[in-house]
Image 1: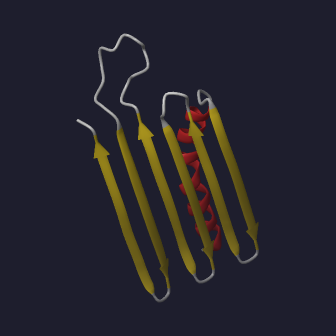
Image 2: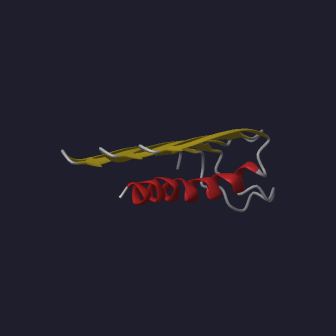
Length: 125
């Protein structure tokens, strides 16, 4: 069962890392940090990715997952701002500036389970 929890924790982290890694390649300023720990009583991962460009676009993502003998859980927070331009310079597509936030937590163990989600979005159009 511990191996399954470890695999779930590692798998939950893989997709956000791939998505965030693609964005880091083109960012004007970027930060990334990742930690992974595994031992006889479970596993834990934590990742932070952030970037900003000179057009005012920003992105932040933090994710953590843990699994051990008493259960498993994860949380993630993502926020962004966008200038609404597709970046090709011809001005043919502009939906206006926008900003968003998303937070999610999930935990499960012998005593039960918990899930919560919070999100918001604003658009200038």
